[in-house]
Length: 150
Figure (tube, rainbow, N blue to C red):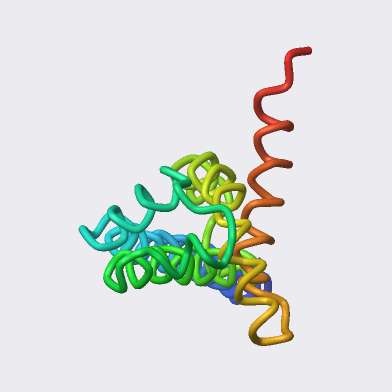
């Protein structure tokens, strides 16, 4: 019995260490999400999302006719969604947290952003906002999975 005691104590310590690591990782992901969420609800981000969702632009000419500060706000909002998608894809965030708070807004914003995405893709020759697209796709899947009328 005395020989087993160190093994039992070591096993308990290992289990506690794994538990503490897991809990710390979850806390880290939630803290990171809170920081991103605070960025997403900032005034210029909000303005950018509102301008984007108003959808008064359909092509490059209508985008060019926007005042520079409005284009900048929209661009920052698209960049923030792209960053959120990157962090989600890399597993830095908890999917349920992201989808609960930003899934539906991301889906709507992605649809509204089509002229901006096409414009950037055409100008750069590269995929535009790939992580924002990933975020939107995940939001669609998550919405179907959690709001299925069975």
